[in-house]
Every structure is written in C-alpha cells, then in structure tokens.
Image (cartoon, rainbow, N blue to C red):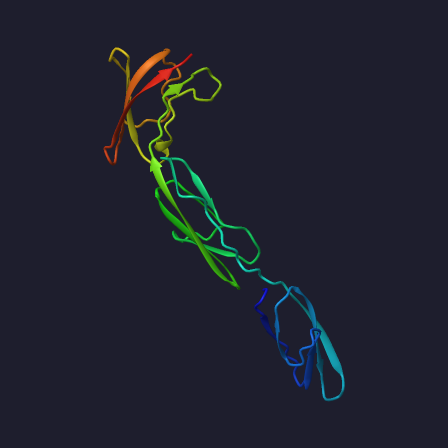
Length: 209
C-alpha cells in the first residue's frame, strides 16, 4: 500500500542471516510497493535458500460521494453505489456488506469503505413523495396503458375513480396498477388512500385514446 509497508517476516530454521531483494538484511521487512520480492536465508554451513513472495499493494481510498441528497417517487427503487476497487470491504448503516444498496424507504444511508490503508465514509439522504400520473394512453403498446402507481411497491392503496359527471366507475381496496385499459377516453377524478397511514391523495387524470 503506498506510503505504508506490509510487514513480512522470513523464517528459516537455523538461518544466521537474511537478505531481501530490496536490500533489507534482516528477517523482518516492510514492503510498500506491489511487486515480487526475493529473500535469501544463509545457514552456518554456507548454504543458502532463496524464496519469492508477491506483494499486491492496496491503494488509499479517495474521497467519494453516493450522490446528492434527493427526493424520489414513493415506491421507486434507488440504487446507491460505493466505489469499486481491489481489497475493499463495505459496510452500510443497515448492516449490508455489498458494494451497492437498493432502497425504497426514506432516510439517510451511509457506507464505510475500508482497506488496509484506512476507511472513508459517505452518506446520502433520500426523501420520498407520492408521484401520480395525470394521463394514461391505453393503446396496447404496454407503455402507460394503465394508471400506474409506483407506491404500490411499498404499501397497500385503495383507489376509487369517478367519471366527469361524478359517477363511480371503479373501486378497489388493494389497487394493483390495473385500471384504465378499458376506460373510455375523457377526464376522471380519483381518490387514493394508503391503508396503513390513511393518507389520501385526490386528483384528475386524462385517458387519451
């Protein structure tokens, strides 16, 4: 690792002297650079034995960022990525040990990245808001064909839909992103309610064919 030596000790039973290829003349040596090193042990008889060892150095971890604090749509999956590199270990504040962490809940997420040279830490705050489409186009292309609510990935929502004259045309206590494919073109009023918090969202949407 640059600037910090990797401590090694040569052990040769009965050897009276040692010499490393970097010039060190003791059994103990500190090696700071990647490379292959040779150590020669000499015995009282005058015989010597040489061995090679390969050292791979760990680089100092640079400062890094998980990205700017952000507000995302409720239910959206956000993947946080720590830097990639050799000899690195990762520890997120939820106990996860991988290089990436995918989250769907609000909060501040932090990661410690460590190697033999030290540790660097970064964090990112995620806030959530309910994102609701205001237009759907049920034309069979599998894009925006139904009223899609990302928040169904993290909670149970009821949905009631009314046409422009106030007539209820749809209701369910567990919405599964499946309304709108057969709805007539026009404007609709909807009421969403989350089961656990009872929070309510109301609005208008347009069905375009």
